[in-house]
Amino acid sequence: DAGVIQSPRHEVTEMGQEVTLRCKPISGHNSLFWYRQTMMRGLELLIYFNNNVPIDDSGMPEDRFSAKMPNASFSTLKIQPSEPRDSAVYFCASRPKLTDRDGNYGYTFGSGTRLTVV
Amino acid sequence: AQSVTQPDIHITVSEGASLELRCNYSYGATPYLFWYVQSPGQGLQLLLKYFSGDTLVQGIKGFEAEFKRSQSSFNLRKPSVHWSDAAEYFCAVVPDTNAGKSTFGDGTTLTVKP
Image (cartoon, rainbow over all chains, first blue to last red; front, side):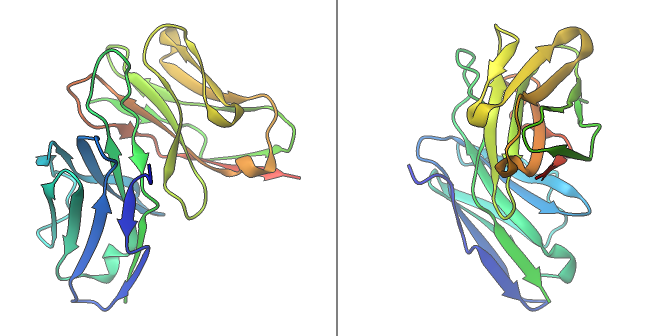
């Protein structure tokens, strides 16, 4: 398995531009999570999906951020318009279906997208 | 609400020395517990997990962790640290199967001295 795949690895954009980050979760995983990591704020959960349905988006900073999961193998995180304070590393993670028997609730993270807004 | 505390922001150990990273959680019942490692420029990688049963769990890269219910702790240990273990380590909990999402600690950065 290729793991969780994120693209692009690096993105530099000008303030006001639209940015789209992409994620392909591990096949068979039914939960997907978007995180943002900065030195100042650490690791922040932005939104997560179960079975392609958004469950908790309370971490999405503001209306400029939106996320979609049109099918089980693809998700996007969009920032429009982007601002310098959005500069961070954005991680996508996926997890298999929760079952009691094996407690396999661990996440598999992608390598992240480093976003720089100038 | 549940919380995870990693009391040590930064730890420095010499190569070959033993290591213990602390993690405390606040939750009424026994949650599911995890340790992740993040090397520079990489995503987080799962080291080990505690679900139930034996309170001493073994993970990858020679790490182990011990769950202590009385202390609400899940400390990570390694008998002999290698230079390649330098990274940031995160403790995480999932309170129950319905919670859905993990709560992560703020992380502990490990520096290994030659």
